Image (cartoon, rainbow, N blue to C red):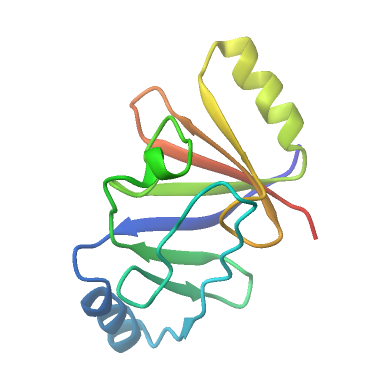
Length: 138
């Protein structure tokens, strides 16, 4: 199975200050966040809540304001933003879920929820860090 780093999510109380820092220090250019909802709930995507930076190889940094009710608003068992997370892109998300099942690791199959063109699964690693697993769908 092939994998690559898709993005790192950094929590921020002041998204605009963080976005200015990454733009100023590294010359990164902010892009619109391609949010898509399949009726799952809500995600604040305005500039005060999220900033997205992407390199030429589609690797990203997401800077998000932690919204405490995010898991409840979206029927998730974990909070992917409050302490940040990394996202690993794979070519066979079904195989990843089978492996998580074999390990007895809980996960959320979020489907095609927050990031356009991707199916997403969220889990914890053994140190309770949130890991997003995604696979391109288009």
